[in-house]
Structures are given as structure tokens and as C-alpha cells.
Amino acid sequence: MAFLLDTNIISAARRVERQAQEFQDFMKEFSVAEAYLSAITIMEIQFGIQRERTRDPGFAEDLRRWMDEIVLAEFAGRILPFDTATASRAGLLPTADKRPSADAMIAATALEHGLKLVTRNVVHFIPLGVECIDPWRFAGTPG
Image (cartoon, rainbow, N blue to C red):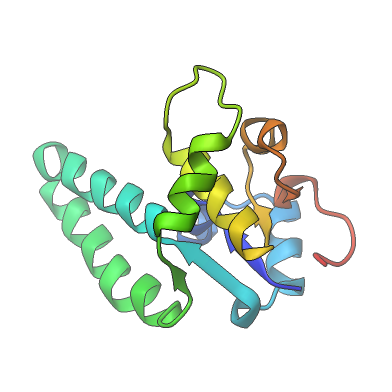
């Protein structure tokens, strides 16, 4: 079973020392080879790096290196674009405020590609019709 990883999952995977046991259990059962990212996740990470440049330039550099050397390398060939079909689908989703959002774009990516979404924020995505897995409530196999 293939999955789309939400930005919060990639961020949590980076911080091993802060992971809950449930998340660690999920990661042990999970195959990165079956995981995809949305181009929107790359955008969100880049926004985070840019925000940190003014607050903590050293941390921003650590994040940039992590993005370039780990995220982009690990997911090479598995970063799904936000293309016209996905944009059209996102525009049809019943978002809470009837406006575009990164969550709607990620939801549309999962729906367009027939992927389950791995996220901690299931309440953001279930109303959009996305099948979700919350690793912090994980029990059993991810598929």
C-alpha cells in the first residue's frame, strides 16, 4: 500500500528524540519505498526554513541541509507535483473557510493519486474525503 506523508510526519521523523512510542512503532512497520511526498510539503518545509533564517540562522542551515541531503534525496522520484488535475480537484474540496489551503492541496494530491495520507492532523483531512492514518494512534500494520 502506498502512502502520502503529510509535512508533520516528515518533521516528526527528523526529531527522533521527541518521538512518541506509537510513532516509532509505526515507523518500524512502515516502508519508505512506499511513501510519497507532495510538492506542497516541499513548499511548507521551505517556508519553515525561510522563517527560521531571521530567528535562528544556524537552525535554518541545519533544516536546509536536512531538506537537500535527506528529504530530497530519500524521496527522489517520489515527490508528486501539484499539477492541473490536482489543482482542479483541490478547488472542489469542501474546505472549512471555502478558501485554498496547503491542507486542501495535500488532500487533493492524495485523492488524485489514490494514496492514504499519513498525518497527525486527521481532523483537517477526513472532512475532505481523504483516508488517513495517524501514526500516534497506530496499532498494527500501516496498510
